[in-house]
Image 1 (cartoon, rainbow, N blue to C red):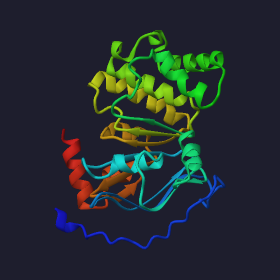
Image 2 (image 1 turned 90 degrees about the vertical axis):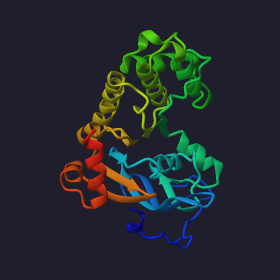
Image 3 (image 1 turned 60 degrees about the horizontal axis):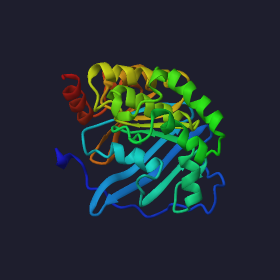
Image 4 (image 1 turned 180 degrees about the vertical axis):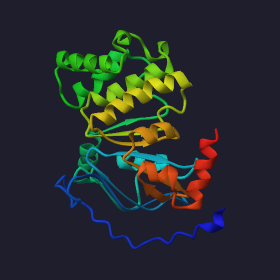
Length: 272
């Protein structure tokens, strides 16, 4: 299968570095813009010339086999991973070596991981109020009110005084989503948020994510939940070998894939 893919050639570095959080050039109405993005882990070329534009309020589902670069791509969007070539611009701010740019982007981008990354020694309520108090400098009373409103929204307000280890996986993931929402993000990134959950818990989390999608939250979600993709996605992006192989509207993506590689992936994943 590897011989189908041409070896990637490193492009000339045409990226521009911002020296401040001054808005970068970005298409009108765009929230996220990846232009010619490359990423290496040592000699391994994990992202190859990634070009992706996400409009404000758009819901993007990213799928593909393990090792295709999906998670690395979205981790680059909030600088958990550093890209080596190309440009990533989020809401007019370019991610580069300027830490004020990185902080500006991270303050507007929420992220939920496969593992919930809650602080195990803190109650759920304390997990939620930590960032609003220390990053947003929000008074504790207001932070608690905000946290409780989101815990109610995700259906676990009664779990507020529990520690993460006392909750189910689905409850912990919903708490992680609520924690991100407490920072009033403009974008939510989800990295296979249901892959560690059993079917009943998956539904709990996917229902919350569907509500966010219905409310117009800009979202990029790496997932193998194809039913979820069909119901909420504005576009589906398929990645393999570090490249975007195909992107299309959900109906076209599932009914009439453009490439044999996409069709093979769909045949395999939908047969399970």
